[in-house]
Length: 468
Ligand SMILES: *Cc1c(COP(=O)(O)O)cnc(C)c1O
Image (tube, rainbow, N blue to C red; front, side):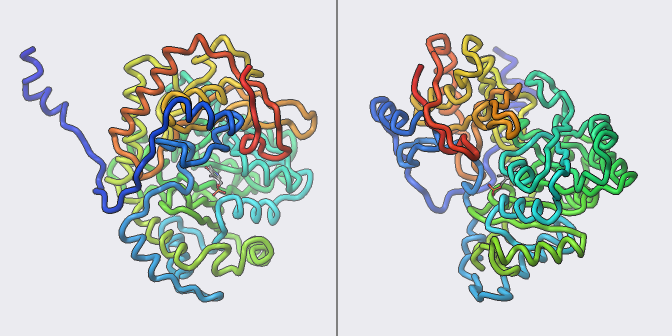
């Protein structure tokens, strides 16, 4: 009893709080269990098909769901909506150059727009693209351009219990083996993600990026970064990798990007905006090509599918994302949720990544086989319990093998609780944790789902299910 009051304990108990205060509020709506039963059945047990008005705490995604700052909203009023040469484009271009270090960029409507342009410009049919695990839209565009994708992430990334500090790392032996097998001239670039979304928001280390660069230099292979959550990745490098403790996030980001030849960006994540993206490169020939392609698919090269005001908000958001207090609270909120779940021994991917908690649905429901869609089931159960919306990241998201037509069977069956940036408080995290626990306590009674409608492309968005 006395120990609680000792100085040491007192200091250990000092709390942190979100480094912002609330200026505008958006009321949340709660629903009854009966309303939720109705809503999820209507949605075919797919959380993507729920209406947001029926959702209480929305952890579907951190994509485009950030709360913008007062500065960003002020920036929206400075939108220069000229068709060509908008002032906001030059602000955005300057921010990308300053903080990511790339010479050339085009804006795109969002990340997949950039992926489409890069894939079309750089990939020839029959090529091979290695990457540290896949991302749905990224791999889709690579395959559509005629490439075969190869996962070269380290094995630890596929092991939900591994505590490797950089589970996003590329396995240099796997990469070398692919080069030996298909030849360097068949590999237009290495697709390097930081952090790795599908692995649980796991970071890649600076040492690994440097080593991949050296290997690629020996073979004349380029590296394109998926920079969607790169600033989050830089916090992990600062915290976990020797030599970076005293560097700023901005310094670490510049060094990291210098090991790559360019990047695709979904501004809907790190940049704290609701829409937008960009593609950047240091290669003048590739830039020439993408500047031609952007007008076909996105818009003129000085707006690329974004309004001027959106480019301004994004330029401001880039600076805000590099603020250490902000980034610590961003990742800290995810960790806080993880700590709550850990108290009850709820199975999830560890260490906790940058943007989400990935519940381990296989461990949740050991009695369900993969064809009963355990992650999809858990997402539906969570919604039914409390109106919290999460997302499947398992066999549904993995889709079918284009050659064989069979389900791809990922080792990981995960249900993702994705934390929007600056939107919810620690109290919301408490509510979420308690709902997960309620589902965990009831896990034995759950019977799984059957898929009754399967779309051709990126099926997880629109597939429909029925209870088994
Ligand atoms: C969201 C995302 C993308 C695609 O970006 P959109 O803006 O949704 O088109 C690409 N890569 C990763 C890692 C992402 O999380």
